[in-house]
Image (cartoon, rainbow, N blue to C red; front, top):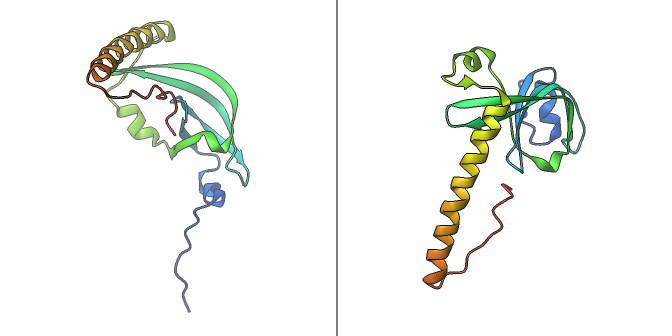
Length: 136
């Protein structure tokens, strides 16, 4: 007698990801890369040798974070990183100072465009929702 494979939709499904390199996207938009060492029934995660990766255009910068504990409710996306594919990506790594400067410039440009868009919508009678800081 053969049984159909079981698919878990709970924290138990993380067992196959232990000791693998993962990318975790958090509710606030941060991207954390690290090796999954532990988790619990609430999907709280412990990542070792972790870093926060900041993307701007076709460039990125890394901030070393070490051991990183993530509360399960803050995880939006979690996926295993294929190291062969990661090395072949057409992205260039920049020093973190340069990336942070580019990120600030990008944020200022976005804020300027949003302010203009909100002003135009307000003039046409629309209510503008300013709660755009949570990706959940």
